[in-house]
Length: 171
Image (spheres, rainbow, N blue to C red):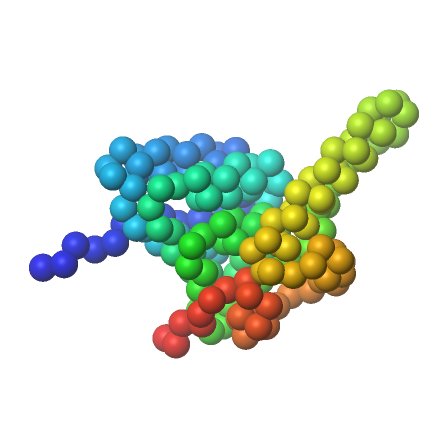
């Protein structure tokens, strides 16, 4: 009898709790020989730094990772999906990709040095995301920047045409 492929769920908001759980589960898979696993994604995104840490874990994983969007993937969840070796979505899935968004607390506006540093950090994060999309989608950085600026929801078919996913699941 063939062995079932292990799977993980990336469900809900990308936050420190999710990052910690993914670290634990991926580390366990690595200890067990880095088998091919499937990552089911249903997430509206969340924290940029937690999302990038999860994406980095996926990218650095020694085995193959199949990312499958079930219903929706937005923001940081799409960045995580992009690091998967095989990227798929159910036919009715929707995906949202956009520029990095930064919330700036009002007290930062009163400190020009902190504000300048916050802006610099946000620009560096946006540059990182643009480079990642350009690399994974084989697009120019200019085209990626324009695409992310659109801030629009994509159907699975549109995501396939752009190269965000490789396959639409039939059922």
